[in-house]
Amino acid sequence: MKTIGVLTSGGDAPGMNAAVRAVVRTALENDMRVLGVMNGYDGLMNGEVIEMNLRSVSNIIQRGGTILHSARSEEFKTQRGQEKAAEMCRRLGIEGLVVIGGDGSFKGAQALSKYGVNCVGVPGTIDNDIACTDYTIGYDTAMNTVMEMVDRVRDTTESHSRCSVIEVMGRSAGYIALYAGIAVGATTILVPEFEYDFELDVIDKMRKTISTGKRHFVVIVAEGCGNATEMAKLIQEKTGVESRATILGHVQRGGSPTVRDRVLASRMGNYAARFLRDESNKSCVVAVREDEIVSFPIDEALAMTKTLDLDTYRMAHEISI
Ligand code: ADP
Ligand code: F6P
Image (tube, rainbow, N blue to C red; front, side, top):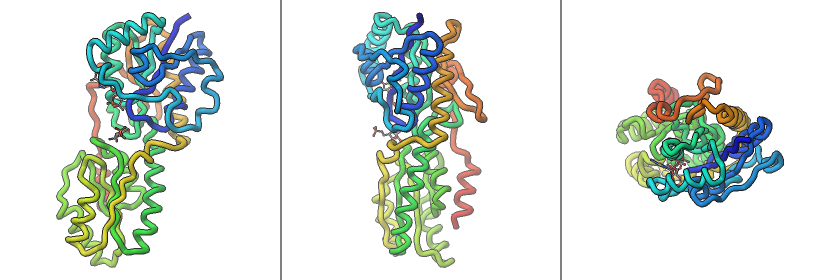
């Protein structure tokens, strides 16, 4: 009987549990044995595994976080660490590994596959910054969380006729900022992908809307695109509008996954386990393209690039006047 492993790695994301559940159930239903690897690549190097059965994944589809826990491992980035992980896979009989995580985790999977362990990457990150796929697991939930939080901030922002500068996650990706920003009707959205002119895009825009009677403002800033506290200070100085900064932080990474994320995770997890059942299949990354679940060879997937849609960004600014 073939044995596969499943781990979660890097920044966690709502829906990772739903993906683990789908991998485990699919594998067991298709005559494979499944080992759950705790603590990402760290746990893999140290052989921290648990035998999974049908009931190991009961009652987790609705839970945020990951029952397998996640970790970042510097040791695994080294050749020695990767050899250690591959050796552990041989000892445990792991012939294929499902890696649920982001870009960094997939680079790890790519490295491990060079040591003979077949890996399948399942995109799980709130940032939506995996190039080969339209959507990643956790992105929809995070955007809905941001929308709810900003709606709340807006209530008090309006009562006090203030400007709220709200920092959302996305160190180098502006997907959450742009799309949640559109959903909350932000006056200005700043993302790392597109250059902005603070004077023109924030201050002048606010002055223009003030002249049309607007009295409260929401500015959405992607993390890695400027400091929200500094920006709030500057806005107050230059426009005279009292301003506050709110940093949403890790609240965006938690919570029960949305319908979209649960379904996406279930479909991707199912695909990943089925993929590993076939001996002739080599390491890949699973993706959703136009609502179809597909996969790309891992080297090809990691060579791809994607960026935010400039027209959508322009549209967001046009309708927020
Ligand atoms: P994410 O998967 O969310 O992008 P990280 O970038 O932190 O998160 O990566 C998760 C883990 O994947 C790292 O701690 C490391 O162990 C492994 N990893 C990241 N980049 C590489 C790399 N270039 N080579 C090998 N392993 C890597
Ligand atoms: O999960 C993705 C992400 O949230 C990024 O947007 C952010 O920069 C990073 O992870 C922060 O993660 P941590 O606080 O775990 O280092």
